[in-house]
Image (cartoon, rainbow, N blue to C red; front, top):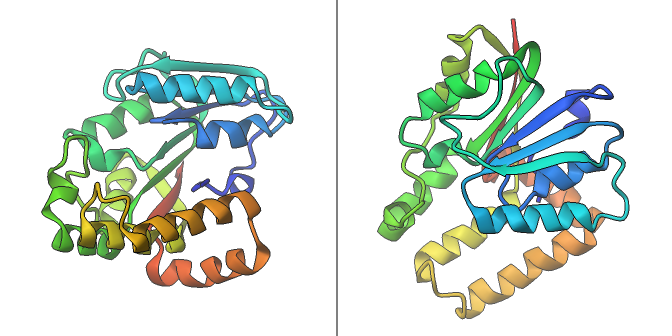
Length: 233
């Protein structure tokens, strides 16, 4: 489930790209399909990092094989200033208590002409989850804030960035989370949750064009994530 629209980034060959909070490597695998990139992924979850590394090592269609996957704290990244041409931070900031410090750290390692892509849960879709289930935001490692659309944009504009695109993604995943909030976040055996999850997994494997068309239509209405694309002005 890729959130970032990589063709929009126009990544140059030999470019250095960081996925901050890479998890199990969903964006790293897509980046590896682009030619001649240097790819770095960091996360605090060692289990997820092992999955990410294994998936990169087993990719038969990788065009970029210069990669590093490492454990790191997004608030204290082990990289020099202006190290990266592009920084991606997808579905991470909503988990971090000092999110403004994390943003400053990500800006520090970005080159002056670099691209910064941030995605977070969309306000009203997330708000419904919070209203339905207290466990959704009280669970360990859960979401501790909801962003309004202008909040992240204004935060980055104060740092000299311009937002040149905003879009919405993953509309078909939102009902799954609403269902989980209704029946219990750990209740994977509920028939509605179980079968809807199977549908999502089938869709990710098949990538059926008609469903993609439906999701593109629904994304502006009920997209799960909002994605911001920034460059320095």
